[in-house]
Every structure is written in structure tokens, then in C-alpha cells.
Length: 610
Image (tube, rainbow, N blue to C red; front, side):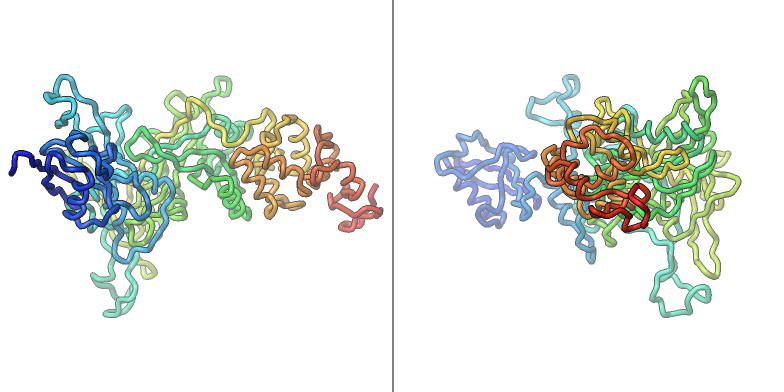
């Protein structure tokens, strides 16, 4: 090799190649050699001096390699230009993002999943002054970045992390020599495969082609959600008020969003912004969920507010000392954390809310839906404990193979095959009295094998998606407490909240649901502008909606219940005075129907005006 020549190593997703260059060679000439060597067209790639895509080398006829301080033996990093423009992907993830099993449907993953796919995810460490023997630019085993699935790192966190994040698990599957070329996350099936024609259908016949495989339960190494965070204490306190006032258990659905959880590599956090309480029957030791005719509307309104259903919460509280305000510590290692019936319910909810995944032939794998239990802790105070059930439990519940035990809530029971249904054998591993590992048939089954625990937290600095009022609007479906959602309670709420900022008054999740779902004047088709104002916290949009005819009618309905609303005379329909509106129409005292002027009897109920 001539003395003036040098060899530059260029690393790409396809491997490392050596490019011969001269000392005075321009950057543009060098990049043409790189393009020719790797088979790229012009502008089809970018070259950087650092692996983390910093220090980009741009084509220039005036700069030489010597001027850029590129020496013999240096390593440069080449990244192909992504057709989608995702320039923040790293080398490994750009390969794994394009992976999809043969026949898998094209799916659009959640925003948080799309974001985490593009992240590096590696755990960077500083140079150890005692162990590292190299210069500041070198790396060794003591300071080289760790992979996000490194078990030693997770075990040494405070507190230790037993489950890696789901995206770290994907990186582990796709991080080998084949870059996950043959990775496919297949959902477990406990049903007989259809279409087998070599024998009569079950129960007359079955073969190894259509028979589902036996299941050995293992503790899941990853979890789809790594943290649950309530935005503020008020959300939880208002939910607990039902138990405090009645002593009966209660249930609600958590609405919020999924965000990045930075305490765990590539982790996901479920942030709770509101709790919706569906129709239910609760006693001191039981809960029954009733059919909810408004469920679809609630999901629709939440979506327009930028929220989604992220989980469910229920109470299991028994008062121990009313003077001290303590509760009984009943869920622990000596009893159970989740009962079998609760695991089945959680599995059913998780099956209803599947996690969209590009690596699954079915287009979905697992679920991000979480379970929160409000129960007594070791200090006899109310604690919030978060859980999910494993993908194996979801499959057993989906295919109706798991039953609860009547006398032992901590035990489940795998069904036996019958003439109507074939159930594969379910096993779990245990340690006998001699210390040997043995395989047991899951009849009965300890539900610890099905549970994944999730930390549940409250932030140091509270977050408020919705405004907090001293006199909040009543929560739905609390008629047993005497708290009803009607125009009298709306008028009372408006009269007690005299803020000059209309957005602060109207930014209440339960109030918005009432405006949409009330039977007198539902605003489902005309509330989109207000929901957009609440989502973006735009006071101008809120004031625009306040001047609408719909809000003027709402104010008129409130005025008929005998509660004086401060500020009621400010704006009516289209910014006009409400006196003009009241002069034009009048509300019936009996049925609240808005009648045309000049009539003495209600057109709806035919009762007199006075």
C-alpha cells in the first residue's frame, strides 16, 4: 500500500467494508467510492463519524479527509436513507422494523410503540476510573453500552426489575446474527385446528395435526406496561369516596394514555387522567358489572380528548379502625395478590384490548390493558397495586379453559376435556419437599404463575389533564349515594364555579360525558369543537363554543331548575343576550321541553306553562 494511502473502515447494516483512500482525497470523491462499494445511488445513504448518528460527513469538493481528521484505520458508520424518513432509527432497529412474518397483515402500531422502535435503547455507562485502562475515546467491558435486556443491570436497579420491557424483549429476539429474520410472536391457541379431514370431528376423532399442544406455564420474562401513574391524587380520592361513604366495593375504568417510562430501558407507562364508573352492583365483598349502554359513547368522547381505555380499577377494602382510618392488610404472600376470578376477569379485559404488533402473524400480541387494586398495605393504609396477567393466561381465558375454585380464591382450575370441548393438558413446575423440580397438572393451579406485577405511582409534581374544582360535578352512576347527574346538579356546579375562564369550568371529564349522554339535550353531534378546546387547552375555542346556540339552550334548561347561575347573562346564542333567547322560547317546568313563544301549554306534555 502506498505511504500516502490509508484504509477507512465503513460499517453498515450489511457488514463492514474497507475503503482505500489517499491523504489529500476530497470528501466527495471518498463518498463516491463508498456508494460504489455498497451499491448505493447518490443521496441514498448517510455516513457519520459516531455510531449514534452524530458527526455527519457531507459531500464537499473543498474538504479533504485529512481536514476532517479521518486517519488510517478509523471506523465510519453508514446508514441507508429510510423511505419513511425515520432518520432517528439505529442500525439494529432499522433492520428489525422491516421484519414481518410471512403472511402477517399490515398493521399500524400504537404511537408509543412506533416511537420506541426508533430509539437506541442501549444503556450508556461512563468510563470507570478504577477498572478502565484505556483512553477517553476507548471502550472496554466495564464501560461499553449494555443492551436494554441485560438482566444483571435490571436486577441491580433500585428496586430490582423482574420483568424486562416488551420492546427490550423484541430487541433480544432480533439482536442475534440473523437479526430476527425468523422471529414470529405467535399467540397461543387452546382450540382444535379446523379443516382436518382425515378423521371425524371431536369427540369422535383427533390427530396430532389438529390437536393443540400441551401448555407448561412459565413466569413471563417481559411485560407490556412497566409503570402505572395517576396524574394526581384527586383522581384516586374521588374514586375511593364511594367506598368511604357506603362501605361497598367499587369498580371503574381507567382512561389515559401510554407514554415512555424512562426509568426502565424502552419502558412504557400508563398515565391515568380520569376514571369512568360504569353501572354496577357492589356489596362489602362482591362486585357485579352491569351492561353499559353508554360504553361506546364514552370511548368515542375519550378518543376526541386524546385518551383511551388503559385499564380497570377496583377496591378490596375492609375498615379495621374507623377512628384511626386504617384498613385491613388482606392481600399478601400468605393469602393471594389476585384471586383466580379476578385473573379471569383481567384476562377477559386484556383479550378485548389487544396490543397491535407487527411481529405477530395475527397482527396482535398480548395487551397493554392493566389492572389496579385499591387495597390495604402493610401499614394498614390504602395502597394501589398494579398487575397484568400473562399471555398464557389470556389464551386460557379466551378459549374458556380456566375456572376459579369456589373455596380457594388463590387457586384456579384447568378444565377437563368433554364431548363439547377439547382442553389441552396444562402443567406448571414446582419444588417438592426434597428440593427437586417436579411437573404438576394444573388441577388446581396457583395463580402466581399467571400474574405480572406493575409498580403504581403518583408524580411529585401533579399533572392535570382536567381542571380540579372545590365543588366538582357529580360522577356518573352514583345514584345510591344521592349524587345524580341532571340539570339541577349542572346548574349548582355552574353557580359554585365562578371562574372567568370558561375552559377551567368546562374541563371536567364527568361533566363532558353528561353533556353528551343526557337524555334531554344530548350534544354528541355538536360538541367536537369543545372537546378539541379541552384537549388542546385553547380558551379561544372554548369561548367560541360558549357563544353557540347549544350552550345557550343548556343555560336556559339550567335556569328552569331555580338555581341562579352567576354569569348566565353574559353570553347567549352567537354572543347575544340570553334575555332575547328567553323572550323567544320558554322551558316547561314539568318536562324541560323548549317551547315556542306565544303558547300557554307545553307541546310535549300538554301541561300549563304556570
